Every structure is written in C-alpha cells, then in structure tokens.
Image (cartoon, rainbow, N blue to C red; front, side, top):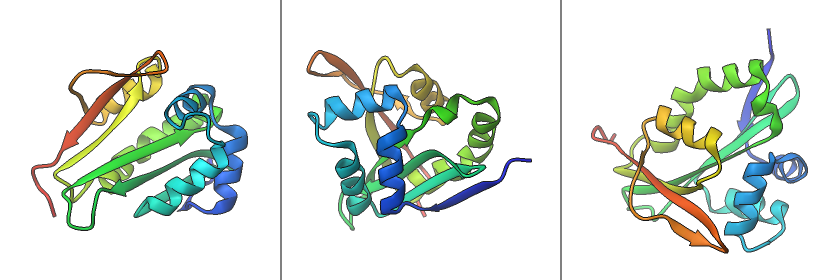
Length: 159
C-alpha cells in the first residue's frame, strides 16, 4: 500500500516542484509567466493563495494545488494545480483520482464560480477537468502562439 501525505505547500515544495514539474505544466507556466523562474512563481502562488497543498506518494512529490480568492468578499476563485511526472505512474494516478473529489471540493467549495485556463495541448489536465465537472467556456486566449482554454465550475450549493 502506498504511503500518501497531503500537507500545506511550503517553500521546500516549491523548490522541489521547480526541479521536477512535468513538461506540459512547465510549458504552461513558462508561457503564462512570460519566462519567470518557476520556483519564484510557485512561491508567489503560495503567497497569494488562501489554500495551497502538496501531495506526496511514497516520499515523492506528486502535485501541488491551491486556490486564489479574488477578494475576501468575492464569490469567485481561481484554482491552480501542477504535477510531476509521477502523475503518469498508474498507482500514483489512481491515488490522485481517488482523492480528487476532496481536492475539488477544497478548491471550489463555497464559491459561486471557480475559473482558470489550460493549454489546449494539456490533454491529461483537460480530461481531468471535464471529469471533475468543469466546463470549457468562452473564446480561447492566445499567448505567444499557444492557445489557452478558459474553464469554470459553478456551485449552486454555496456554503
């Protein structure tokens, strides 16, 4: 049985993610952050997020996720997630999918709308977002020749 640890996202996790981010997430980050260093970007995401977590499977970083609240009074948030290549491992992916309902609830619960964008070539993430109940809406945004698809999820039972 795999040992799973889900913890608050800390500086060490940002450093490790910068070193081991999966190529598709690295591409998304580089384009959207206009080439800013990944570790600095991850630390910024941690600083502006009201929720930020890191998941480890058998001592190896699997993914980090969080949620940026527009304002304290806003009913909107911007969930984010990045992963390492470990997400492609069958056991790790199964663990991730099993825990996804809790992750999704943590990311979107209590908000009228959760939204962000994903690179159209990020097929694994797009498949997960659809499975998680997110809808793709609006016109794509093109950044440096890369097409990003806006997605959102609305909650009718806001806490």
